[in-house]
Each structure stands twice: as C-alpha cells, then as structure tokens.
Image 1 (cartoon, rainbow over the protein chains, first blue to last red):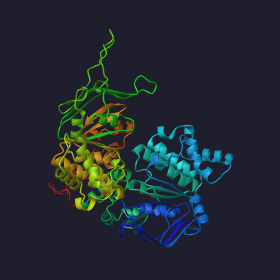
Image 2: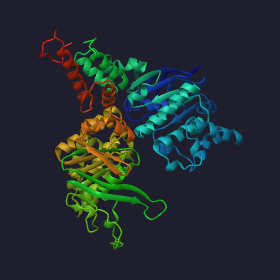
Image 3: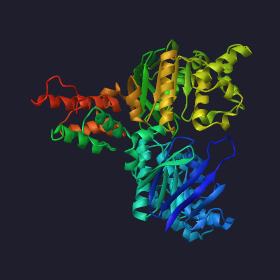
Length: 281
Length: 321
C-alpha cells in the first residue's frame, strides 16, 4: 500500500511572498520505506511534515495518507493523525506529564482506548525505544536522547503506520542522536514502520532507502542517498554539503587519486588502503 | 583578558541529599586571543565551568553572605582555588560582577529562546542600556545597535522595527547574538552556538565568530558537540570529563588520541575515524583532522608511495594522476 502520496500540492502561509511555501510537490512514499528529506532552513521540509498529518491543509493538489484523503472531513483527518505520528525538534516541548508512563499514555487515552489496552501500549512503546526501565521516571530528569525516545514512545503508543521525525535529533548530543537513530532504524527494519526523516545531518540520511532534497519549496533532487551524494556540485548549489568522508574523497579525486566517492569513514579507509597497496596508482 | 582557573570546585545543592559535585579540581588557562573549544559529554561539567566565567555561577566565597570558616584542626587543607578573568578576581565578593558581565558576553544554547522585546531594536538595545552606568543618548544606542546588527549580517533598516518572533530561525539567532555583542565584550563565551542550524547556517555562524575574533573580540570560548566543528575552528580544546579537565590540547593532538576520546563518550571527527581505521592497517596519516587537512595529508602519503616506484620522477607532484 502507498503510505503517503502528494499530487501537485501547493501551499503558502500567505505571509511573505515565496517564504515557507510549497510549490507543486509530487511525491510518494511506500509502506515500510525509510525516506529522508534534506534541505536548508526555510526550504519547506517542516511544512511538508505538517501537511502529512493534516496540521496544515494544501491550497491545491491532493494528499492521500494510507488511503485517506487529507483534505477530507474532520473524521478523515482524525484517522490520518492516528496513522501518522510526528516527533518534533525540542524534546522539552513534547512532554505533557510528569511521569514517563503518563506521558506515553496521553495519546492512547486521547483516542479513547480501554484501560488495559493502554497499559499494553505503554509496555510495547517503552520497550520499542528501550526505555522500559524508566516507566516511573520523571521526564525532566532524563537526558535529551532519553526524552526524545520518550517522545517517540508517546507517538508509538497510538500505533501509527507512519513515523515522521522533524529534525528530532537536532538538539541532541552525539550519544543521544545515536540512541534515537538506532531506535528509528530498528522500528523501520523490524516493525516495518514507514519513516519520513527530516534532517540536517547528512550522515543520518545515509540510513534511508530514498531521499528528497528540497529547495525553496520544491523537490529538486530525488534518488537513493548515494545517488544524491554523488551529485555533490548540485548539492552545494542548494547549500548542502557531503558528509565529511565524502568531502575528503572528493578532494583526493581532485588531486588525481583514483578513490571512489565514499560517504562513510569505513569505506574511505578501505579506498585509501587500496590506493596505498599500489594496485591503482 | 586572560582566563585562569586553578583547583576550582563546585557543588550544586551543597549539604543536602541532592548535592552533586559538578567541578572537581579544575585548572585551566585560556590566553587572551585564543579561539578556544570546550568539549565533553553531557554532565561533564563544561556548562558549569563556562557559567563561572561571567559570574552567573558564583563560588561560595564570592557570595554576599559568605563568611570564611575557620578550618578544622587537623583536617587536610585543600589547595587554594583561584579564578581570574583579566583583572577580575571571581572568588572575591567585592568584585564588580556587573562590570565583568559587560566584558564577558555569554551566548546560551538556543539564544533565540531568550528574545523578548517587541522589536528587534529594543531587544538588541536592552543589554547595552542595562550595562550602562548612566542613561545613554539615543544616538549612541542607535549607533551601537546598528553596528551590532550589521556585524551579524542583518540589514539594520529592514529589520530594526520588526518583531523578533516573526523572523526565521537563523535570523533570530543572529539577533540574539547581536544583543550580546552590542556591549563589545572582550571575551565571548558561547554554548553550542551552531546547534540546530543547517550546514550553511553553521558555516555562516562560525565565520561570524572568526570575524568578531579578528576584529575586536579578543577571546572566543565555545562549547561544541560537533568534533568536525572543533577540528576546523579551535586553536586549543579542553576536554571535560566527570567534572574535571582531562586534556587541554590542540585539535591535532587531541584527535590523535582516538581511543581515549571514545572512552570519554566523544565522537571523533570523520577524518580521525578514517585515520584510526588506517592506523589499524599499519598506515599512519597525521593531520589536523579537518577534511581539507586530512585530504592533503593522505595525498602526500599516497604520493610518497608513488615516488618510491622507479618509473616516476623523484620530484613528481602529488597532483598527477
């Protein structure tokens, strides 16, 4: 089944001309896919996320999420929000309760689930993010990465089909970022969760099956992360840059060494070793 | 202004069951003119330390109610603490902390969350007026605010009357920084100034800091989790761990200690990761761990191998394919 489809979607906040608006967006995300969205600030990434769960509605075009039209009735929007969970940037803005399990229970309570089912959902969600030992903890006392995992658990408890992460790791330290990315990857691989990851970290985009690059409200590049990063010059015109390992391999290529464009340190080390062993110089 | 700390300790909630010793015997000197990086995992004490630098956190001896205690007889005497920023003695309660704060500008994490005024002009002018000893003339304020906004790369005429809350994220952060540099501090301390910005925003912010540093802000101290950023920008780095300073090194020296850094829960810059993997294979490429520096060092290494093969001229350049 198709998880998300945008057909010629246009949107504008009606404020400044051209700023923060989307222009003729067409895209599809299949169920179970992991898709990254890249682009500089103000390119329309977050607007895209908000359109996916009906927080905003398009001025023209059609958005269909898990078979439901996002411009439909209030009941349809409610259905879509059950299917689409969004985790935002700041973990502190997404906490509603002073105890972890109450916080995770908020979503399921909101959709009117029976008490026993809510208990099961809390167990499931906290286990999924590896925070089952923190059921009775106070969110305020947790680290950034732990708080963000609780925010993800709160979304999972509603059992959405699609998880949207809107720069959810931007405020975390490297350890917290890794924790959150591990959880997301596992949910995608093992639970078949559809993931739409909006990020500034090029390294995170590498984990995705496909990626989009947005610029001034339009999708300007699409392909696998590898395909996109192989077009480094084009990427730079959108103010994005390769992961550091990619920058190094490009520099070496410019100096005339036959290294492939590498995106991860492991690959680059192998390439340099291969060059050094003399077969390719 | 030189920053000098010796045997500095700090405990939150002392004497209660919530007591946490955040700084343990910290000794660190930051010379005037440095572009200094502070790294360390969450809870390592780095924020506690930098908040000392403009007296936001006061040592007990600097607090008004402080009365020196007579040391117990026979108790071990701890080494005397010291904390100087320029001529200010931060352990002395008679110090003029207000004057200190005008000279040591502090930019917190996500400074845009602290914007409060109705217009950009009022927000930036606030600090200036606040620190002034007597009311300032309108034109003096205007000149300083204009200068600060232009320094951070904003168009004064276009932005001064707008609400800071209507700006984009990157613009808000610039306005917040303008509100700190408007007093022309000699030392600028920033807690993760580039966090949450896109790659271009990060580059622009770092080049703004370098510009300030070259112009008039003599010393820049910044906390960062991004090791690539540290490698590319700092003259020296202090690594905090468990409340103490573990190392004070140049980035080049620091990132050659791969194993130690990972033990401390820190990421390595990508170049250092590659260097470590190659080291395991018996290939040593030493660089400053910036992408450019590492690429140059790797190129030099690879061409040195090429030179050894007799078919190539001995003085062959690395650039030949």
